[in-house]
Image 1 (cartoon, rainbow, N blue to C red):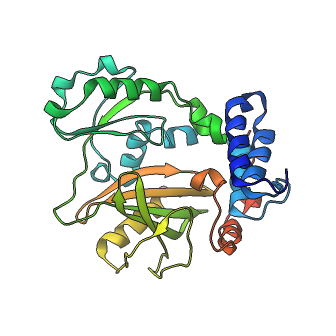
Image 2: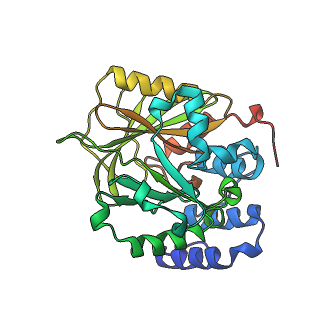
Length: 299
């Protein structure tokens, strides 16, 4: 398969997604990795970040990790660790769309499923909200299992449900920023700021924890944002450190309105460990921060 063009790789990847349920996790990930990087996946002695993500998927499987990626269950965990003031308010959780009593919800809210990484529906005014479309979208999302496409095993065991959360709003003239702290063995090392959000597109900028910009790009365009030291930044850094303890690697995300900080989500594998870093040196740099010798294999 060496020398395949992008179109053929995409076609083979779609076939893998469609029929890959017949393969065990290791062989599925070996094929997927090859299609993404044009090289063999080394699982006996992985060196890069993307390789070690695949190793972690296969070998680091503690049951308590499942609740950390459940968008409903994680709220109580985070509130206990850092305080409820940093958790987005929840209005309810339901197994089906038709169980929701919309009369009990405020005029503005966000609907999403507990196990899906996308597909949030924003209601800014119930009078204008398309309830039929929401029912269709959420019913479809409930049937998905995010485990299968990239074998992130934690998602396989989440109970699919619907939640309604408070709609986070920003002051006029402000941009809702998404801070993503990359933590390794209990220490935040670098962070990513997503800004200039237009629909599903964002601008990305990476920094070290001393706010120095990094020459790192992964999948998105670079933005114009510059970081300055502030009490809110230091608060997020402290919160990320509290939340990443006892974990070999996790990404801790926060929403920042310019005035308030909210926990957003945990992610165990950046872009599922199948996205190239530019320049490529960063794949090895981040990989060097994950010490597999410190990890008890749990399968």
